[in-house]
Image (cartoon, rainbow, N blue to C red):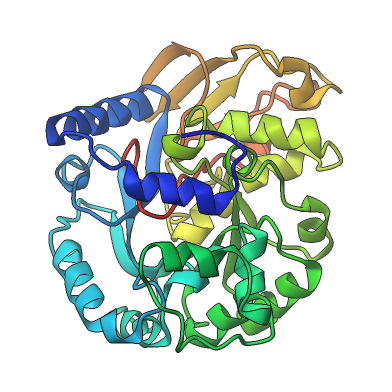
Amino acid sequence: MHTGTGLIPFITGVVTQRNAAAEVIADAIEQAERDMLAGGIVAVGDISNAPDTFAVKAKGRLRYYTFVELFDFLQEAGSDKTMADGTAVYEQIELAAGSRRAMVPHAPYSVSTSLFQKIRDFNPASGIAISIHNQETPPENELFLHKTGGFIDFYGKFGISLDVFQATGRPSIYYALEHLNPQQRTLFVHNTLTTRDDIRAAQSWSEQVYWASCPNANLYIENRLPDYQAFLDTDARVTIGTDSLTSNWQLSVLEEIKTIARYQSYVPFETLLQWATLNGAQALGFDDTLGSFEVGKKPGVLSLQGLNAGVGLGGCVGGAVNLRMRNEDRFEFVEGLMRFGLMGSALKRYNRFISRADEYQPSSTLINLHQPLIPHPFI
């Protein structure tokens, strides 16, 4: 896929280029999990709209939260079939110990009010996590503010009518807030154009809101980044993700952290660590065993070599970083960069970090929000 095209040309390409053979997909999934295990991954949040990864997940080598993603292109009449198709996928998930699943909406611009309600009725009323793409491109807000912009032409090219759709006069996130359940942990994904007012509105709506940022994917598709200062100013709980290889050069949360540090260097490194660690574990509800050094948890330990005191990630931009992983009773050395998913405890090599485990800073939970290597109609 070409970079810098904007979301609508990008998803048009994804929709029209989904022809990988089943055996190629299966081999890629197996390799992806091997890479995750070798890189110290212990759990993954994964958006799926097909059962391709389910056999691998059932082996229980990693802890997975599978989000079965649904969309009906704002077609109220299509919500019954969409829900039936999604339920058939959902029921094929064989949960390994510690793994979870939920039915989730794709995005405000692709989910009708009827489908939102069906998803809400299907899921438990509380105690789960859901994900939804949010404010990734200007045409998304334009659609809801004025019923104008690129999505009108996009749907028209596929013969999808928006005659029934009515603009709300407000940014797209408010449409989502009207139809989501505030009693569930809600992970808004991308948030490239999300403002302080949007963040405050969502966090007033629910105390269980998280914001997943995938900076390299945002650069890959839209050539822009979120305003991270807005999230700092509103005490937002941010997590860091990668999106998929369809919209990224690699699946490395360390590379995502480095991108933020490179382009918005005012974000404190300690904050980036928490975004890439504990916040992700809490968003998925996996913080019972992962995400921080606490009695009874088993997060594993990762030591990043090559970060200089006072320099932060800028000192290692562009170079490979040695990764050491300790997960329960095994210790192995990996040359390269961290992959995506929920990882053991990442320890920053700063002089003021000391060697006693009980005084380490919060650990590491790294989160990906897409099925590895599998193209989706909407990313």
